[in-house]
Length: 230
Image (tube, rainbow, N blue to C red; front, side, top):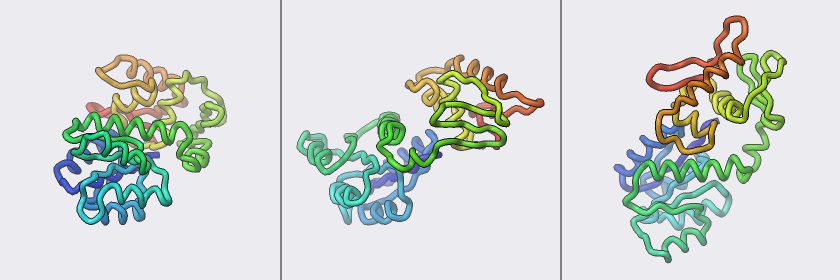
C-alpha cells in the first residue's frame, strides 16, 4: 500500500523538487501553495504525512498544524527558514513530529519522511490502517502478515526475514516497479548507499522458491528494478 504525502509551501520550486524526489521514492504526492489550500487537500486527499512550511499566506504552518491536530494524528514535518530553538519548540509543542530547516538537501527530506512513515505506521501508531491488513494475496500467493508465512496455492514456502519483507513490499503493490534502493531499504531495513549484489542474489533465491509450472512471479525491468506480476 503506497503512502500519500502532502507538500504545503508557497515556493513552487521547493514543491517541485520535493515532489520529484518523493515520487521517485515511491510516494504519491499532492501539493498546496498556501495554508487554506493545505487544509482543503488534507480533508479531500487524506494524506498519510504532511510537510508544512511555516511562512505561508492565508494560514501559516502553525495554524494548519493546530487544525490538523484537532482531528488527526498523521506525522507532520515542519519546514522553515527559521532555525531558532524557540521556533522549533513551538512547532513541536503544537504536535509536529519533525523539523527541517531551509536550505536543505532533498535527500535529507526524503530520509526524514521515510523515518517518520516507518516509525508511525510500521510500529503501530497508525492504528486501524495496520490492524486492518492481516494478509496479502496476489495470484495464488498469500502472505500472512501476523504469522509471517508465505503460501503458494496453499503450500507453505520458507522465507528468511529479508525475503519476507521484500515479498511484503512486492505484494502490497503488485505490478509496481521497485528500485534496488527501495528493495534494499525494505528488506534489510538499512540505508542503501551503493549497488549491492545481495539484492540480485536474494531476488534469484526468491524466484527459485516461487517457481511453479514454469511461472515466474518476479520480473526484472531493465534499468529500473523489479516488480511482482499481478
